[in-house]
Length: 252
Image (cartoon, rainbow, N blue to C red):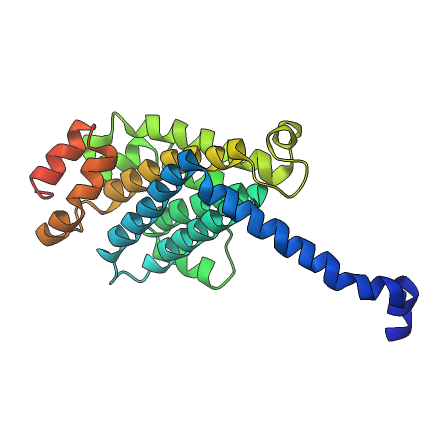
């Protein structure tokens, strides 16, 4: 095996590898410095960091549920996405956003069906986007809203459209659609436009996560839970009358 390696990579080339790797290190540091030195981007990044923290605080209210684990995975993926975005790995950051969407909404879906959740944990069932978002009985359907939060029936369809749109946009980066190559830098370097694209996605993802969480778990939260998370919901989706009413009445 070592003989084959030396045929492909002669000693002179191997000696150059530390320089090549050091160049990658320098480029990575420069990209991070530029991202954190961009005042506009830093404001949006700080907001995203706070949003992820808030989402973690929300899922703490359902910590005793066995399926809470999948929500933690979704938020871990958002943290990975954030790191990738700051490090100028923009395609990877948007791909991670897609996975976070799949995991979070799968968590909502599986929370209503323990059998499917356990099958997924056993690696015997996949997360299927079309099934989760099915207009008949998916998590954005009127039937779903009618059962878990009737007050959301009229608006749930709007959030389904938003979810489908942001998911489709993230998929374009996963599949390497032609237009995605125009947005991303041609070399490993900082891109203000690409980073802001990630931040704008976060501004959409956060309300989606909060709204679907409330639709599914509003009846499971205690008055103390509502006290703890009310500022988060009022800040992000407090423009929705039903949300304000639910928070003020502490779910009653």
